Length: 164
Image (cartoon, rainbow, N blue to C red; front, top):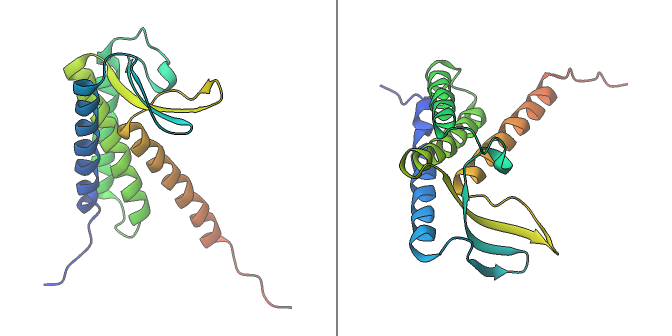
């Protein structure tokens, strides 16, 4: 019997994202008060922020249930894709596993806290990017990998030009 790659094997990446996300958030909750700022390096602080909305605090007045249902629905869709999709698309499988890990990491926060804990504060001068967390980084990296896969796929599909 030979080993056959399956997309569901990438679920270890999902579990790792959730684990790191929850550990880092717990450390922030235990060691920082609300709105505390700890400079790490120039242009980067650790903070303790509460996000009741989606990315960039959009829809912050929406119920956490909306975001929980959305995160669970996205995760179910990703699980179905990982189970059914061609096994030769490893980059897409990794990307979707990262996105699912990030989505579920933030779902855990919304279920247990009613909000998401954000703690990375990137800034330039007086301008601050929206605070974020490990789950958000995983979602962003996963989205970037999906874009990369689309670009690579478009290059693969271009017909080679005949010499001369």
